[in-house]
Amino acid sequence: MDLRFRGAEPSEEERAAVDALLGPPASAWDGGSRTAADLRFAARAEAARDQLLPALHAVNDRVGWISEGALEYICRRLTIPPAEAYGVATFYALFSVKPRSTRMLHVCTDLACQAKGAESVRRRVEDHFGPAGTSWQESPCLGMCERAPAALALEAGTPPVAQVYAPATPDTITTMAEASPSSNGSTPSVKVTGETPERAAVPQAGQDGLLLLRRIGAVDPASLDDYRAAGGYTALRRAFDLGPAGVIREVLESGLVGRGGAAFPTGRKWDATARQPDHPHYLVCNADESEPGTFKDRVIMEGDPYALVEAMTIAAYATGCAKGYLYIRGEYPRAVARLQHAIATARARGLLGDDILGKGLSFDIELRRGAGAYICGEETAIFNSIEGQRGEPRSKPPFPVEKGLFGKPTVVNNVETLVNVLPILENGAQAYAAAEPKLFCVSGAVERPGVYELTFGATLRELLDLSGTTGTTRAVLLGGAAGAFVTDLDIPLTFEGTRAAGATLGSGVVLVIDDGVDLKSLLLRIAEFFRDESCGQCVPCRVGTVRQEEALHRLSSRVDDDDLVLLREVGQTMRDASICGLGQTAWNAVESAIDRLGVFR
Image (tube, rainbow, N blue to C red; front, side):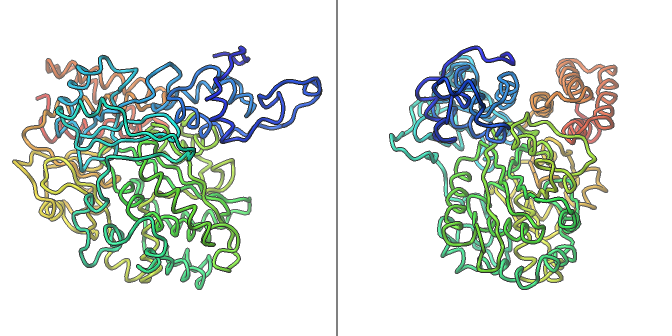
């Protein structure tokens, strides 16, 4: 693509998809028919670039890929140079700028699925469909690890259709080849098939004493009335009684820290944002959970979506935000549908919008879908993605609380962090701190995989006793691809306990590895994952992830001390010099496998 327009025209279907999102063009400057008057003035002086990602989704959802004509039409509508829009469109794995089938099958080959036989599924898919690229492709973690191995078919149309296959087996390939049940309706909402009840992902469902998972399986996730009858919006009413400063004080006293892996005190982040004199303030919910092995946020969004809406409203009230963005990964079609419904219902019932509950609070939520980029889970990469840029991390400082989304003070929290605010306000900071809950995503060689809620201080052994191990446990991967392998099952599941053991809680991944898993292949998959997901912005990560994978390929066939030395040097360089957490953690799991499990010795 060039910086200049090349005269490519969109199809009528592509034009209709964009116009349905942006409205019809007002003039030729917006992509409409040219008249003499249009040559004398421009209809808009500044770009509406933040609509680029939704516009790309609109075309991809309708047609299945993004042609040059569609891209040029989007660029004319949003006054974006074609070359820049092309850079964004090619950044995301769920988009294609080359013709492909309207139905794409995404076959997960990541850690939890690989440990459960995804390679045999991938081979059978390749035998049936041919080489990857036009009708199917390998996919990083789809967030369905409790049902591994998993596959997801996305079919373009009106409406688009998403069909889940989990667990997927070689015997289901014929079913995967069949077209999804489609519809010719006019609704833009995605139609989702093949999903299991939300309760199936929560082995503790219905158990007394749960705080974060108590409504999943017990309350209809589509019903606002059911949510309120089960205690919903009690926390928001208490927030109004406390006032913004009182809410922040409660969150500070609770000791709540971020659940995405960084463990930064949530109250300090909220306080710093609230104190910023620059306005407007923005709230961003990071629901782009792409860490391999992680699916807790998905389960909350599917099973208790109003809890997230309420928690975001409380966070906005405390930090002075009038607008919130819920950035959710594109591989979660059911969660997207549930949240779209919850947001619309809350807005219709006066729980979003102007003067919420008659308390003078004005706040609304806009849902933004990601499009397949692990790096967009980094808090500043989300800002670039929402703004219509490539999802590359920003250098810090300045920090988001000072200059975040659109250059304004921004508070960013993930789903689990936000929903923890509800029991803090419902029960009080001291009661919450005495039994602080944490969610864990258990998968791999266990009898009952799923999301578990434990209090901080429980041991890894206690968690595995709940889930039931199968076979001989060789190791446990804590924290996902960015985490570390451990063999000590008596590690306390706290941030301090795992840190002392040379590991991390990270996003709550607990992947149990037995003797049937090829650890060399698993490490290669981790290396491939980081190579593919590196945004390429900084040299240590861009080059280091490739060199790490190359060395592991050589070591898989022949152990060489020089390659082991090279691995350590490359890993340390990435850890010390990479811009963001992707490069800084890309060596962690490999290092722990070599040092603790004796791989390549």
